[in-house]
Image (cartoon, rainbow, N blue to C red; front, side):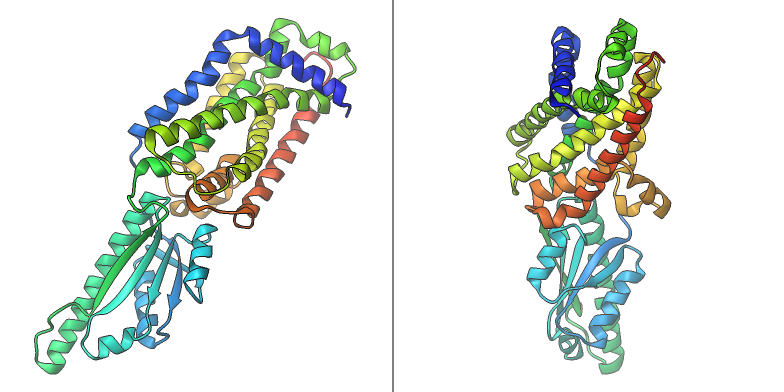
Length: 376
């Protein structure tokens, strides 16, 4: 692949974009309008929340409490942690959404008729998880306390002054439970997907309809160089849109950026490029820009519904979860929310990065193979 030919295709694409005033306006206006609309309008019960256990009591009574939580169907224990530092790492990396902390003396307090305390730490970057996990745990603790109080009454013949178990909920990353804090980072991925896939899906079909595809056919440009040349200008446009969304989100909705912006921008290149390669794949299939547009819109609905943007990914059936892993947005949502809200680092998101790299490689190869230097 020669850089000169690649840059020539990229320069040609930029010139065409500069002449297309409606498209340029859409690139700037559409992200802002969608951000303001969704940020204000979207305000969305989560079962099987991945939960880790910090059991400092290590008694039959503490283990029974954990089993009672799992029996509700709202929690799935995915492991145990040794201390609060490990609990923080697991939540930050997204391997769990909640952590239940049982202090030393939990069983002893219950045996002595004292109030036993349980702490529930919840990942506040997803308000839907917070509400479901906290409400269910509070109800369970109250029911447990009431049952134990009745047992003491029957056994001792005295009135129990307080529930035997109380829950102390603690929300991390989004303590105010603001929906915008959860929605806006996700909108970075949604809006980039909408614009990147749509614009590049029309790239080859636009050449065909304008009669300029013949120039590419007789040129020495290889299919891989054409694909790369079409992608490069839109990566730059994607960064502009991403910056605009983050800036408006911070100024209008007060969404924090806790982690490294440099890391986020570096990892975003994979996501933007993966969507562009997907759009180019659509472009090689469609015969007209209208067909390309229809394919893009057809792709957007499952992309939004299955990626975890609007509905909790953990609540989806297992086959649907497996299908959603093929969507770039599924993995980028974990990256952008992890970095902006939790301060996640490279080690926390490396699995998602590998998925994005694999998706990018697959669609780049497919787009290159489908493009033929001849009229379709």
